[in-house]
Length: 159
Image 1: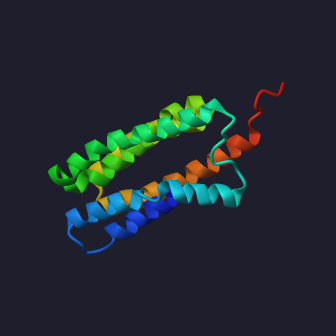
Image 2: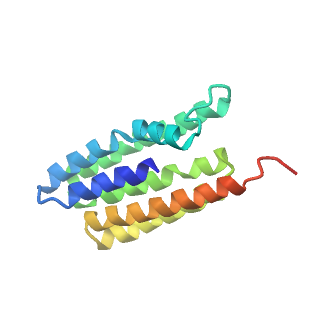
């Protein structure tokens, strides 16, 4: 859910008439509040943001932090191919979902990892960054909705 807000911010940035490098810098800035937004949303919807009793919480944090290392690629794209930076960030986001499929025993994470990674490559190659950001908003709303229903219907070991 937090990523819907992040991608909406990115879309707003790319809807401006600012130069591409400024838009890219602001795009990086838009990603910064992801964790605080996720924490606020978790409080609103009544789920634990982090479960200190579960060793898997630490793993989830490590899997999320791994994405930061991939952002080095986006930083290079920032000046090398500025009009493709949003595409690269979206692909990094999609790819980082894959291990969460295992962590949460979630087919939704597995499927969306592939769909987002390949889909953003295709959309990003043929459309401007603003269009891609808008597509990501829709994709993230769908992802959140499907994930909600998957979680609601998950048995969690009940036979």
